[in-house]
Length: 394
Image (tube, rainbow, N blue to C red; front, side, top):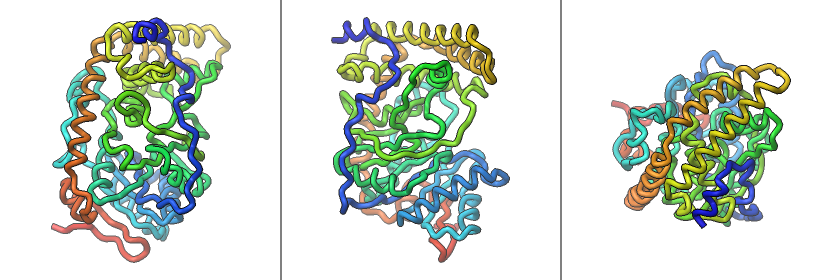
């Protein structure tokens, strides 16, 4: 099987065949315990960003659930809390200034260490924030949480409720991202050049059963959400139900995006290509497979560059070409052994994460859990319309 898959190591346009049919939402299914929003964008002075966050807060209010905002970089917990209070949003908000370096209670992850200080180190902290949310949720006994990115809106709140209800038969239920498709730079280029490029379930809009995905975590690499969806050998039970909208942006504006994505995009597309053809993760655990897939990936990028430079000029085409050139240059730094080493480390990390999660208490009060993870003085709680106060005071 491994040799046969290696000979067909091309990047697919769609992995939709890996998704299960969404189970009918149970009428009496429990609702969401929290909506988790990792955010790094400035709110003050950005009306569009403020409106998106307000929309998510009102979504949580309408569903009767908590909003957990994990802020860093240009976002701050006090700005979030003050925004919601100023608009009278009656939602229980837990706003946390997320630390860049994980604190106590967070398991050691080999995949993070092996990329730190290399060309493939990622300039983002979304994986850390999502992992922190998983640990907090487990510690307080929550069962179902939703992840929504800070540029996502949910037109129909019932879609999120129904997606949560569908978790009875699945570990994860994603919502289809519309408005602006959720893809990597290379896949955006394929679509822009006329290929029927699909999207897949992603961490920007999905609900998670904490019991069914207890050993899953987000590695610190691009496409971390695809790795979260994987089990020991194949994709765990994943379905898609409902729809959200992502705010448009120019994927080719900054070449750093292509540079940051290339290693993780190569890994994820390579693994999912095997799974989509009926193989297992074990079939990717050899350098021969990655030698073939890297050659295919580079050939794809080169073909896209040729098409971009020889077709009719359109606005943004020069930026696309520059971004693809950056992706090609970064691809040539990736060695087959690096792909194999990462996957082996990821498998060890799954065991480490599973052990750490199993050792967590599951009956803490939220205040106790925040103290356990060293977040007591970095958290503000907004209790609906009643109050806004620091959770702890020195």
